[in-house]
Image 1 (cartoon, rainbow, N blue to C red):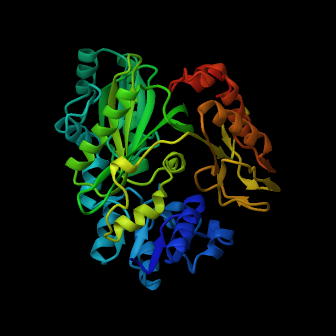
Image 2: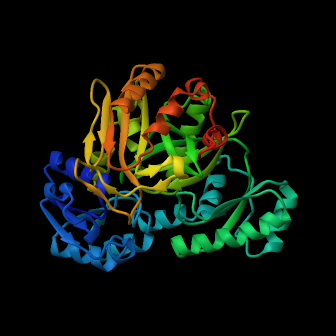
Image 3: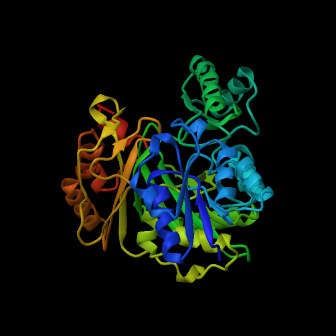
Length: 448
């Protein structure tokens, strides 16, 4: 087991890893930018080092600075969290060359699955359904138009690297495709340093369902069932839940088994999320693998009772998974609302600034994962999420009622948040009845 771990991240996920390490008896080294100096969670780490200015490109994304902090801190491993360097295979390889364990997959597996086009090829080889798409990268407009005319509009342009909806565009005709192709390439290059894209046939009004996987170094690969992430705005997830209401028991079993086959074929270890879309007829298609822990991992923790962060650390250190597939059972229903410092009434304009008062909801089955507190200043430099409000109840109806009550109790004074929008979504008949897809928010709430 490790003695010291560096957390190459900030905010909520950094605090989450610090807590898991403390319970495992592992010392932690935190890193922070000037924009996060003075954050309370840093006091909970055994050591904390400043790695640069506020901008992420000069601090959290600066590989040399992170590695320097790891060497000064004398750590055996680095936990990357999510975002920043979490899916950077080059950083992963540098960790290995410095004899520091990367708490995640190998650089080879990360490269293989991080490239969405290569991941699709691997999925086909593993007999996992994929959305009809181009055979390789799209190099120019002529290739894009040829594919679109073969499968029919609309089509989806997707960057092979990264995630979070960047480098993705929808095109419904020739003119739109030409323009969107250049936009997607430019955005992907700026965000990920890789402007390569491919095309898929657009599945209209799909459900977004993902499968949580954990795999050890001894050949054990286990799925922890699925999460439904269909409540999105512009490809950004707002609400996640488990179990999914959009798939049958048979489809759930098949989808989870497909995810396991793919991860086994990639010789992948540690946590991964295999993402699928589900069409109106209930057919599911592989879209990508997130080679890291997900923001919404607590949804799975609540329905399975498994601490994913601790399990990541144990697996990375060489231990076998402490459970088998038969041990993993979905119990009850869990919902997560991402509380973002944004103003939905102003097209989700970021709302950084001082939180004058934070009142956290509680009660049976309520969990709030956040690094924020009364007096905390939300910086303008990073992702706008300030916390994740979760509930776990015996049934979905009870979970919805509990979440509505918890949202009503949550107070974040001084800045704007997405709390009111979450209340509106959870009260909408379509959500209550499970009749939602990835277009639901934009179709239903005009202010979005």
